[in-house]
Image 1 (cartoon, helix red, strand yellow):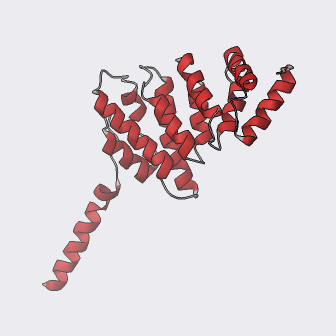
Image 2 (cartoon, rainbow, N blue to C red):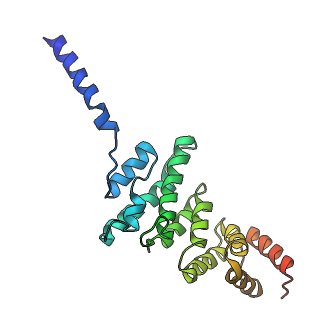
Image 3 (cartoon, rainbow, N blue to C red):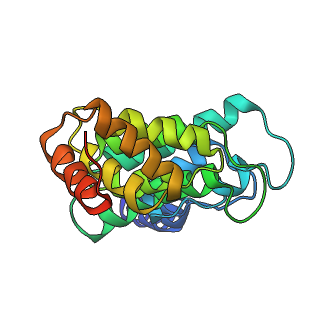
Length: 205
């Protein structure tokens, strides 16, 4: 009888393994589901559709909770193997896509500040987050965030300078020209990049 009980227990455990490890994708996930999908499968599911309210209005607290879970995973998910790299990139990519409104819907307004958090806190996802900031639909907001980063002491200040010079058109160059004249960029590598831009465009102080 005891042997049968042990066998039955193993059968029941085996039957429950899919329920334990599978993560169901729904059309209206909350933050817990999004985080669970990323950790178990390396995908963000319907996070972008919810954040951009593609299927209808959502409560702001829910949107912010989902976005915060994406930030946490983009910054903190461990591992330099393929799984870790894929999971962090999926989280960052979902936030960027939502902030830019890619795929339709309303661009997620809370995306900009959260992309900044990723840019200054994640070495692996900083470049993708910075690119997202540079492409924000609100160009004034994009320029302000890029100025803040370019004039900071963060290691990614140089990348902000580079993106301003290559990916943000005339407004980006005008901003860089002003920062150059004001000597507002102080991070050593960022200064080197900015001096190269100034030389190319013939700027002088």
